[in-house]
Length: 324
Image 1 (cartoon, rainbow, N blue to C red):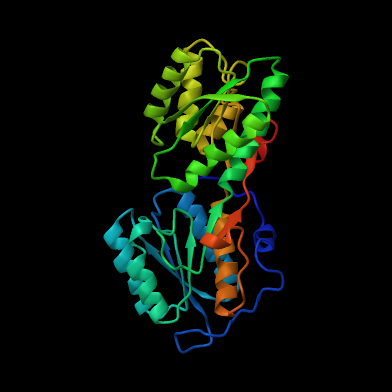
Image 2 (cartoon, rainbow, N blue to C red; image 1 turned 180 degrees about the horizontal axis):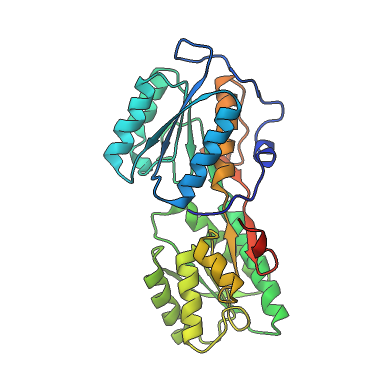
């Protein structure tokens, strides 16, 4: 869930319907004034990923002249529900929420719908609730980028092995699972075989253990993809502890562009990572909110789930210095 700012607001805006309203005061505001009020309920402001998301959301909202109200859920389900409902009671015109517990979105969205307040979800999940749209990273596309890079790097290393491994996040991380699925589909197209696919439950210590197990059973693996960077860096450390290089011997790729991954790439301790862009995701939710307030039809990448995808980018030694 962490990343770097990589995509401009213009790119984010390109994902929604052409000709959407950029007016500073869409019709339908609930607070009795001409100024639109947007409430943003965020997962937990102690994490850099959500700090970046808040910055992108706030910047896009204030650029429109909207009033911005922030609520920090602090990784607490009760705080999420009561705080988000409090924003609605305060008369916000639109609610943007990055939910700590998606399955608890029901009463929040029910209250919003009763008051005619659109709800845009940012990342994590929608819990099956009737939100207006959800913005997520292109996780499957990120897995594909990782596979394409890995195949090219293995060839550049002069390796001929066709066995690779995949380390997944916790089973409940349904969006993150798309990363490994995208990786597997593409790497198999490239002629490789995924000989091990194990969960590290998003934890570094488990990622390290899983990689040790993979190496014990499949010492000939030419690459490994991890669902997030804590596991990716840990897997790379396991590769090094086995006397091999995580760039030249076993191409090791993570996901998120966490600071530890960026440092590892610069020091040749990790081959690559895939960067999400929470600031651009926040800006995109504001674009969608503007459309919803103007009652303009939204365009989705996955209409069945009302999903809008934000682009991701592969980060390797070639472009790591561009990451801020």
